Amino acid sequence: MKLESPKTTINKSAQETFDFLSDVKNFEKLMPENISKFEVLEDDKFLFALKGMPEIVLKKKEAIAPHKIVLGAAGGKLDFSLTANITEITENESDVALVFEGEFNAMMAMMIKGPINKFIETLVGNMPAQV
Image (cartoon, rainbow, N blue to C red):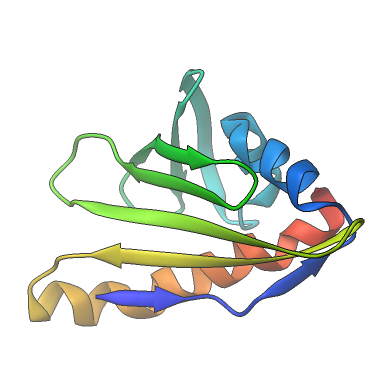
């Protein structure tokens, strides 16, 4: 399953956007309002939970400055990745799109597609005000 957020434009350079997203504690600022828990576990790993959902642990798996950051599931039953693709528009402006990818059975995919789509749209939608 692959889900992509719409692109959002941020009034910061690609490097500044990359630096913000490279620091996992900044993801707390991007989370939806219904977050019930956020905890930085290590420099490159954090845990979060949304109301009514299980806790999810994400770990930074790859960082290619200033264009790409890949977060992946750290443990748990599900294997997936969340990739931030950063495109430089001008010296002081960049675009970000999030891509969620994971292997799920048809039943699971049907159940999580809507909530995950909404989640990544919220993350990317909160970026312009936070980065």
